[in-house]
Length: 108
Image (cartoon, rainbow, N blue to C red; front, side, top):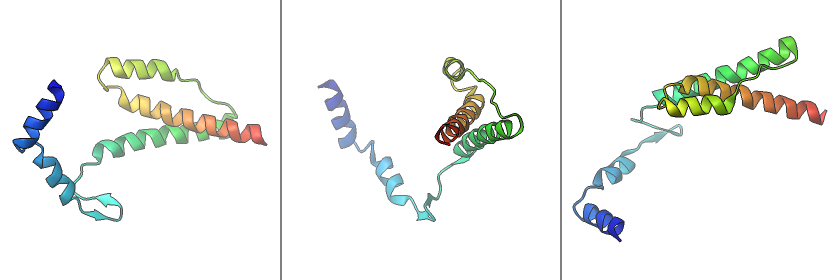
């Protein structure tokens, strides 16, 4: 009940009006909201794509993959407050490509 009272009080005082204004002011052109900072997402996507491409390259050249301890890297990233996010995103991309290629190979 305390949470309900807290939210109700803040709503009545207008403390959530900024969210409504931000939502209404989004300008969607080409499917991308204008005025939103996507730099963080671009870097994450870039790291993910680099990992994905590295896995494809490893398979193409050596016909095998490197092993990265995904769960350990995830844990390290969490312990250091996302300071290893680039490494984690790279490994996620690498793992996705590795799993995708293995599934394709199994179906052939």
